[in-house]
Image 1: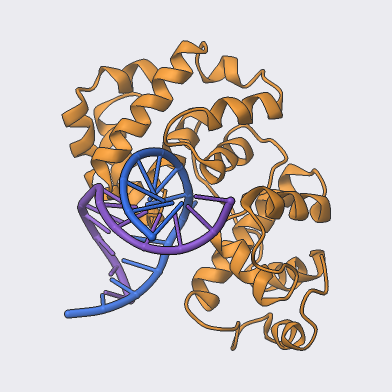
Image 2: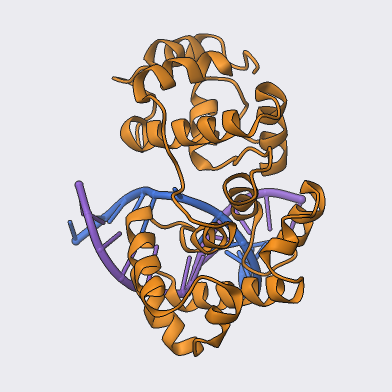
Amino acid sequence: MRGVLEPLQAHWGELSWWPAESPFEVMIGAVLTQNTAWRNVERALEALRARISFDEAALLAVPPEELAELLRPAGYYRLKAERLRALCAASQAAGGWRTLSALDTDTLRHWLLAIKGVGPETADDILLYGFERPVFVADAYARRLLGRLGLIGGREGYEDLRALVERALGREVATLKRAHALIVEHGKAHCRARPRCTGCVLRARCTFAAEAPGAGL
DNA sequence: TACCAGGAGAAAA
DNA sequence: TTTTCTCATGGT
């Protein structure tokens, strides 16, 4: 696995991912970016920032219809307005994001997953980038890349894939952030809809993968 | 015009 | 249990 990340880092350098000023802002962004390009998320975040301060009470004070309109640029705006309200209500009931930050990682993850609209990937985005916890975001880019490299079979569930990569990379937050960012940037640039990473820095490894699938992490 | 993006949940099979 | 459908704007 580290052998995959080294050429990616050599090519992409240090990536500074998920610009946000607080864990709460990461929580908002993680919901807004569900199946949505980050460019569109930024527009909604700007509209939101111009209207309110980023905290649970301020967001919940915005009428639901107005909140949905503010989120329109991010797509699925009615759905995401409901999801943000559910997340903020849960956070507020728990004492706010500062209180949540004192919870251990497993407890915090279970708490997040119990909120309607927060699935495993969104929860792990929040844990890794918001609360600096050692989890890997096992998104579609990771699944696609590792599948093409023959490092996974491709039928693993989300939790299985996450556990596999965490075992391979260790528990260092900076490493897990870097791995996720590199895999996504690489995927967006080279591997989006192609059957193999032709023309990219990992091409040779993909060829190897075709010959020796299931080489393991 | 068609496809996809830093998914999740409900409904159908 | 697994697959399919719905939610939606904006860029390529």
